Length: 113
Length: 112
Image (cartoon, rainbow over all chains, first blue to last red; front, top):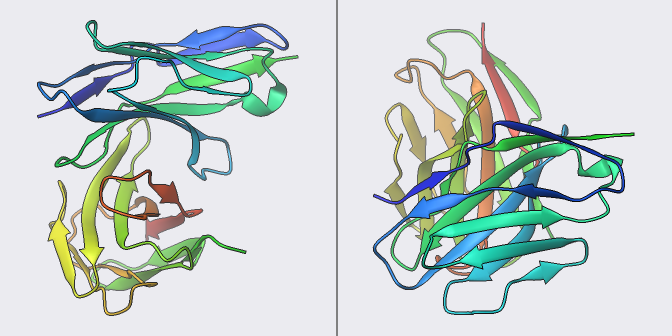
């Protein structure tokens, strides 16, 4: 079974600084997809970024970027220029073509003014 | 506006009652999903449907039932057989089964 591990239950960062959230996964598949979702206090799950395993280039979306290390099975999320609105739970998730989406337990990020 | 709607936002149930949570999408997505979220936990898959009139059990299907009579709708019934139904329920959809999933705003179910 695929597993996703987020080793940091909580993190905090000062506004305008950079923070990196960690995620590791376990799979024997070669083709898969990785995601970061954000869940703010409203509890709506919002897609932050998606990475296909066959792509060597790390995905970026504005202030959000990933460091995808396939050999190490690591998929960290970097948030640059942190804003108060980035305060949320962040979930790492993993999916293959045949297996459904599997989520980590989440990292609670607080951005302090 | 395209999106996924869930209703109601809050739902209270007495023990022994069945309740149905609504999920509707106008994204023309083929696949739809139901997840349960408990405090301190990630999401766990209850049921999913890749096409109309077909659905499969997820990891925690016991005590739940679904139907998929229309492409846009995927209601979830929480039956009295579900031992601990108090949780936050999220519905999602994707264009195809292996595509990115997009989520609705969720329903908070509380058993009194």
